[in-house]
Picture 1 (cartoon, helix red, strand yellow):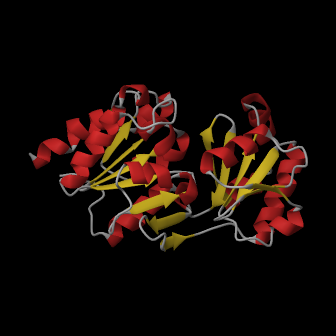
Picture 2 (picture 1 turned 60 degrees about the horizontal axis):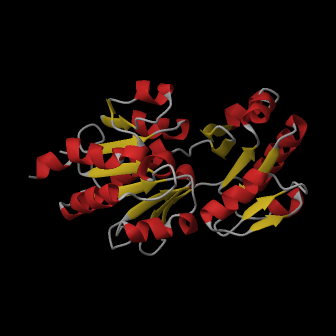
Length: 272
């Protein structure tokens, strides 16, 4: 019996216009009413997901949310942090130097802002700040390294980003968790941070069996770790082919309310 469902947000719970469909809202509401914990697992910070949590009634006592791709696990009602693992000041300088040598735009996220060292601020930094509902600042690397950083992102057009990644030092891949969360986003996280690790720790806290009682649903490479962590993994119909091969089940696309279909198919029948 599934007792916790962990949901990626963009490309999964949200439709292509980044909105919640009535079907998804209804299915999540039914699951929660049945006693199933619904946990949003996103690369966004808390300010970028609060409106969605409110629409889904997921900011009550006992609700959790995974943010910054696992760097923070928080109580959704109070924001209290259960897990917090970020990037150190020296690590940021190493990442920034690597990005400059590779010719890639970069920004870093704190709990309350998006910071870039690029005077010619990349359009994807602007997009990210708008998406997560946080201010965007230009600062020097030395100024940014003094902040409490949770993750760093290299952002550029897909072709430019992929070419730049080839020039990144091998040490970067050994010292951090690097994941593509979108064709134009390379996220750089603390080596121990992933959605999968966050779900493992949260499930342990809630005394849930990962093989039998937890389901995860996602569509992109940054969801791989949480799909691999559980016995009931679901790829969206719009997921990458690699993610589809990782998952145990495949649901409909996010344009077809695939999250609702999965909950109705594999979760709610056990509660009837």
